[in-house]
Length: 186
Image (tube, rainbow, N blue to C red; front, side, top):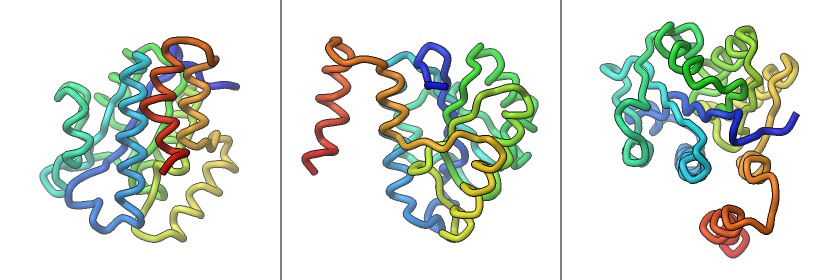
């Protein structure tokens, strides 16, 4: 099943100030989050971002906070976003059956969110280059487990190209110029 902009939402899980310094390749996964948020905004794909116990782990990192309005953030104490009533209510209110998922930590909050969203009837797509954990081994194990459980593992470019659906449109030219060409040149 292809991802479609009109049926997708983007869920950014726990890219938080006090957590990210301990995360393997944190700069890369945050950059992927920023990249996908900016494309989602251009294509009118709704974006939500969770914050796990922000009093302890801090708010979302500045690069994410700068892109999203305050009402895009949902505080949680459950590891799974889907187990948090307010977060799941917000996801359901979007009326989108495809959830594009990225965040930290892959083997805890992201994994539990993915599996719970599937149980809730959502089609879950995990952006492999947009997740990490403190240990690379935990990322590998999380990806393997999610794949085995039926979560679709994708890359950020797969998301962008499937959301765009076709070339030779003004939208494709704009996204290609601003987000895709720069990847190939640098």
